Image (cartoon, rainbow, N blue to C red):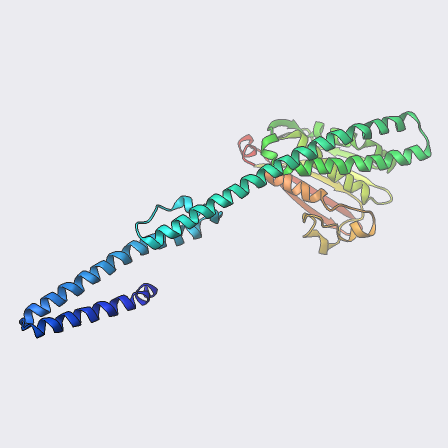
Length: 335
């Protein structure tokens, strides 16, 4: 309000000067004082009403701008929330916002198209590269030997990295490929364990299943990938006598699937960052090469599917990962 009147100080000064000058001329012409006063008052009152009307219009418009700006998360949508004003400065601002909004929307559309093209390229590339990997692993299976076995292990790692790339590219558009189904936890877990059976057997893992005969509502393929990442981590950071446990706890409004290993554990200072993109921590640097994407993707996918995920650990003793499912199917439908 103060700024408005400050901006109008020149206009007000001119109006006062004009009123005084006209009053002087009328006085020279010998008009009586009451007439001169009435004319001056009428002139100044009209000027004041014009200023007041302008002030009200501008205040209403700019208050609306500020209110919407504070309320909106996506500030570039501000133009869509405003009516076109009836004063010049407002029209200029409104047109500027319109052009800015259009430019931003065009940029967003181009970025989305570029992202979609990139995702399609990655998916095509992954499917193409998986074929020769599968063929090479089949050849290795039919020609047993120490060197061939070592090669198969490396091919398995490549296959894992390729799968990470595929799910990473899909993670931003999960809602397009998200199908809620009733899933038996026992079948899901055992399927994932079977997928990694070679690594688990070679590493001499002891596997335990407990209380898994329950159902959850989610998307099986995404959960299979998440469990695969957890099993892969357990293999990477195993102890001398590795053990892996899977068990479920059914609570009043949720079901918690726990994956517990007796591996090397995670340092307390690294625990709060295990879900950060690209974070490998002390274990990733010291024991084995890591992309730092496994747990990041697990957390991202769980978040998009409306699931919870938590990690706890004791260095040199164990690591526990818990996936929390809503018990209600309706909650699962709202990732």
